[in-house]
Each structure stands twice: as structure tokens, then as C-alpha cells.
Length: 456
Image (cartoon, rainbow, N blue to C red; front, side, top):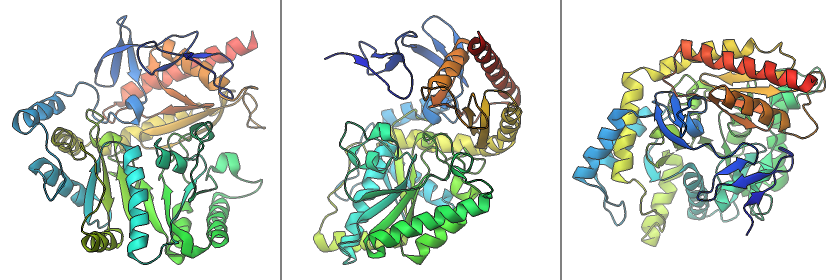
């Protein structure tokens, strides 16, 4: 089998697999082998140091090489290296962390179910929603609505929720029962003369039209990220969440807030549901829950979601679902210590204050010839690149401009991620204002260098 992968619509240069891992790398760039990390920085095998402006994969909240997390893992390994949560059994670390999460939740929640990744968590929520509908005697209420450009994972079920064509092509996805409504990207999708509020009204109307078309008695839940991450860091327009929730309440559709990227301080609040006054029935958490030092995710369910599931499992005698490593004692111990650090060091406040500085500095790039839009909140941001501001278009091959600027940034010592032609930024929550300045100065240099190369 060939290890070459073409990426149509993203770049016109071939991509290759690293021979010993599944890392997909640019053919002319080669694999970047990272050997160590410290704070907001990582270092490659040649000793070159980089600002990790994506916190790994949106996830290393407290930075790299945090000794307290290493120690927490070691203590738990020495005490109880593994136990499961099956057959009426549990362990202290899981109980303790579940209580912490319930106490942190922005709205009343009833129970926590631990899994190992955001994909597993969303997959599990889908199963539980179907189980709940059966419990309520609503066997037709099984359809799920997500959004175009939304991201919810890569298992068969969660990838179906994901609204990105690249995660569907070649995989026979999405599966049945999964529907998609419009993406709330005002800059890209707004009509001439349409205000943000009017755009939000139209987005809510699109959702309501879809629900009516499919039949309200067939729709179980709506899945959405408060801020869309992997779809391009898309921040909701004004009044969007207020209007969307009104539609869901009207038709008795549950709301699943996918806080995998947004949770634990990213938007300047502990959860983005607080930032946007979202009242979810289910919250899906991962990534910053453990700063990705351990694989860990959690599902928080309110009583409206949980009680019918509990009643049905009592009736059937079993809830036939779980994972061997779900609630792994080492993972939840690290998660607990990670949350302790976030709270003790006021990292949510830092995301708010230093995040405002990041947003201000990036907004200063808006007049650059290659910048179409700067968007973000807290310590998450996107810079969408164009070559034609009026037409909101970049180069002929989608993603080519983003790749070029991203590669130049890496040469300058900053690791980011281009999502098509959008540069994404999601640095560790520990970043300082001075480090933000260094980061944005490098972005400016990369933009200038790319512009010069396009002229020549």
C-alpha cells in the first residue's frame, strides 16, 4: 500500500506518511519530530524551539512538562494503577473528580460518565439519546442535528455528526439519522446588508425549518460547539445562542454542548456555555480536562437526560455500555490535579485578560493585504487569509495560502494549524502578554514574507 496521500482542495503538493507513525506530513517539509516541551514551548530533534500556538491539539491548558501532573500520575500509579467502573464498582479517584465536575458545571447536572476521548464521548451520547427515546416510548425520536463545519470526532458515529466533508469522503459517512443545519459564520455566510442579529435569526429559522421538515417528533437532540474549533474558529454571531435555544425548547429537542475545545477556561470562562449563556442538557468535555497528559473525556448529563436512562436500565437489568479504561484512575487523578492548577493559578482569568490582548494584537492585522477576517474569544482565535478582500477569496487552490503562511510561521519558530486558509491559534492558558507579542510579531513576519513571495 502506498504511503502517499493527496489532499485535493488543500494544497497542490503531495503529502506522505511518516514511515513508522501515522503522521501525515508535507512532502517538501518532512516530519517534525518533537522531543520535549516546557511551558508554552516544544523542541524538535534538532534542538529548535517553537511556541506551541495550538497547545498541541487545542488541549495543553497548563503547558508542557508540568511537574504536578507528573507527580499526580505517579502517586495514583503507586496506589491504584487501574480499576474499572463496571458491575456496580468504582474507585475514589473517579468519585472525587466526578463531584468536582458536577460542582464546576455552569448549569445543574446530575451524573458524569467517563470516556477516553471526545469522539468516544459524543459517540456515547448518541447511543444514550437513542436509549432515552426508547425509554420514553418515542422510538421514532432518534434523529440528531449538528452543523456544517462543526467537529465532534472521528468514530463512525461522531464523524457523522462532524460537518466537514474531509471526514466523510471515502468513509460512507454520515450515517442515517444524522442531519446538518447551516454554519453560523457571519463574515462568510451573511448576506449583503444583513446585520449579525438578522443573520442569527436566519440561522435559527433554518434550524426550525429542518425540524419541521423532518418532523419534531423525530428529532432527539442538537449537537453544537459553543465556538466552532476545527471548522475554522467560528465565533457565534450576536443573539445566535439565544435564538437557537428558543427553537430547541419549542420542539422539545435536547441540547448537547460539545465543550471539548472550549471547556476549562479557553473562552475566558470556565466553560463557553457560561460565555454565551447556554443551558445544555449534556456537556461533552475532553482535551483541557487533563491538559491531554492522559486520555480522558467526560459526559455531564442533567436529570432530564439521565432519569429516563436510569429507569430503562433498571427495567432491562443492565446498561450495556462502557469502556475498559473509562474513568481510568490515573487519568482522572491527572484531570483532578489539572483542574486544581487551573483554579489555583487563575488561568481562566488569564485566558480572559491575556486573551483580550491576543485578540487586540491579532485584530491589528486586519489591514494586512492577506487578512480577510480576524475572529476569536479568550485564548482561541482564527485569522482567515485572502488575496482578494472584496471577494473574500484566497489562491486558486483552497488551503494553499494558509499552508504557505503556516509553513513560514513554523520556520520562524511558531507552530500553528491552518484550517484551509484560516490560521488557528489556541495557545496554553499559561501564556503571558509578552509571549503573545512574540507570537503575533512572528505572524506579521510570516504574512509579510508570504505577500512578498506572491509578488515575486
